[in-house]
Image 1: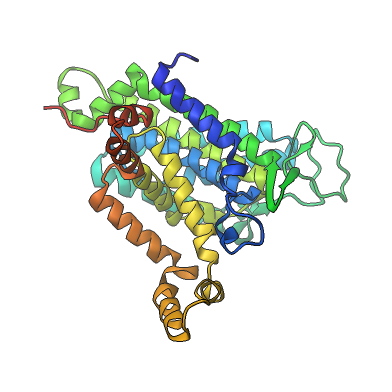
Image 2: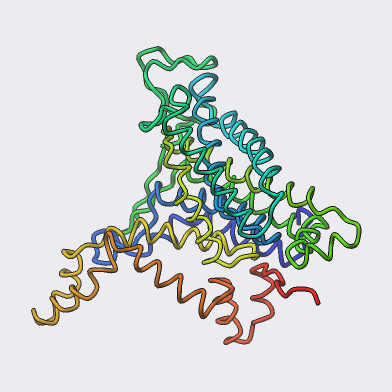
Length: 399
């Protein structure tokens, strides 16, 4: 199907089904119940799952296949976002041209950054990309204020009159897809469950599926094989007479275009852009997503992105009052003791929980969540199938 073998087709169908039924899967608990706190099926969070999944998929093409670790990929996310918001302000509020321009501008910027940064490898490459990202952040924050809006960023205003829009000067425009508002949602009540189907989420999910399909084709192509050869032993590859630089630059640009797509979708969902999207912490976040999910695997980055965004939006909302409600059935002394013990790991302390999980994954599951799934599969006698379906890449270096 679509040029994929049966196992990759099965994986693509699985991801498509999960994306389609996400409102049901992410809302397993009834509204109003004590466990409803853990429901993640609301539009804003579901959009973040797929958008940062796209970001991580693109980063994995560079890091997972070539081994080049970039600490500056947030710069392409930011460039894509600014390109998209300007397209909406000047031309049209339709998200399609905005997303296309986000991909193009991010790709051009990635070409410039990659051409310079790929002259070095290892930690020197990582530091160069980090420097470019921080320079981009500084430019967006202060130097290019007329273009970027500075600290306050850019957003659609009542005074904006896009060339291809019929909106009057006093009406605040909203991003749309051929007139369909990206915020449009339909709510379905089934007993005590409430499921929300959002237009913006499904548009982002379609983009993620397309990006996921392209990544599969790259992984299985001769081009992907060349990138694996670069990761395995670039010096030996050069000895064969093959120049690896065009391949690594192409991977860098493709990865940057994925980041631009994610940035454009972020603007489509929330028509506001700020320089914080280009800060080094945003670049570090996508590194964590990829490693946590499984470097060099197909579905791993999506899982890692989902897990981190889930913790950021769900675990961070748990506070002491909620904990007291959970443990109210216990004696007061034990209740207070448990709340005191758990308190540092929830709310603003969710980063501590993430750090512990990341440490445990790196130590015990170097292949990330995908490796964990494979181990569970082997426990039930389906290890080979689990390996194939997750698209795990063979990371053993050539001898």
